[in-house]
Length: 202
Image (cartoon, rainbow, N blue to C red; front, side):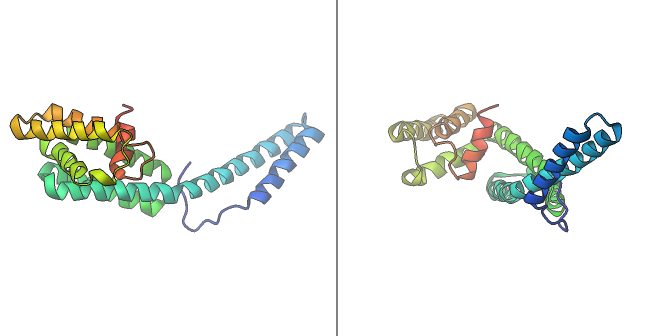
């Protein structure tokens, strides 16, 4: 329902309103007539398809940018912390992304983003080097992040850095990253925060 044809033009909203008015007129005048009911049903079906196309067209650019940001972030991380297993994963997903883009398929796009977020969480949980990269990133960019509680964020970072330096723990590093994400306001444009909004709801 959310697949767009690049050659299609957006239907005119005013024309769709006229169609709905026509359906209402038909039903008011001859609502008990079988042929009228069939005609009204067909008109409504076409109108809803057109409305769905308008909605999908408006959604696509935002979804497309979001998918690009997620893929770029993970591919950049993979170049530093990935392995052969992850490279195979990304090769497969890059093909799916190309297909979703060529079809402008909003449903496929949203599904890929959801799966990438789940993969992101699994990667954080199983790879201490991947989790540690976020501790390093947030420590280096601390003053540029809009923390909801700056003092608590600094405490978490300092504790995490101390733990990593003295007794590295995969689970503790993972939990520290999640704790930091909780201190970043929802809606932050940073791609990692967008992922955390999904991950923390699971």
